[in-house]
Length: 307
Image (cartoon, rainbow, N blue to C red):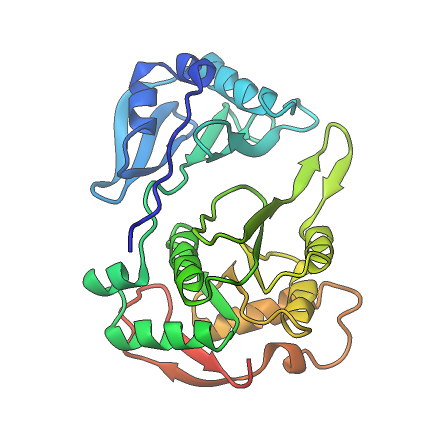
């Protein structure tokens, strides 16, 4: 089974603004994030080297120019009234987050690059992250159309692991129609019948198309499986209803410190929806078994009865 490769498309305007040193780092496959703090020095996160502070200094005007360019390419404007932007860097498919004064002292940004390689479940086993038993459990759960929740803290590899789940779904259920919902394009799927959808937020124009709206649209498209990149609000309730009313076998990520805490997190988020009355246990289920032998540092695996 071949891994999916993410090909970087040229964005000469952005590269010129960043300069040759930063552009070279953007093209390195081992680097997953680049960011600038208040001190103006460029730092990066590499799965080979860890966190590295470079000697590359970007003055505030340079950082502001990068933020303005990234936002301008998607027709967003950063102002004192709207001092932050979350968008995608065209060509790179990278997630860009930028802030300007007054919410920070100096302009800052964070770039999270899209994966250049999709790790498979088999590769997680080879690296000792998963046991063969965990891989078999996940594949059996996917075949049985169980819903999968990937939990962990910021930067723990939730999206990377969800991409591995998507790869397994594509091979185990090759004829299923898969629809993914995200704020920004980070998920990758090799399935033939695959359609990604994205939220939209333009504060300058007062336009918002949120995850709940996407979920409702998605259910009208007859998906076999619904994948949510990250759920962080009352959209969790709509997602749970979709999974439990003819669209089982979905997956999503959320922030939590353990598998069990992930269930509580989903319940708490679902309760933010005013329509989420009554006992949510019917939608979420109840944790029945867990594995303490997991070598995944962010969480253990847990099975949920009936889900």
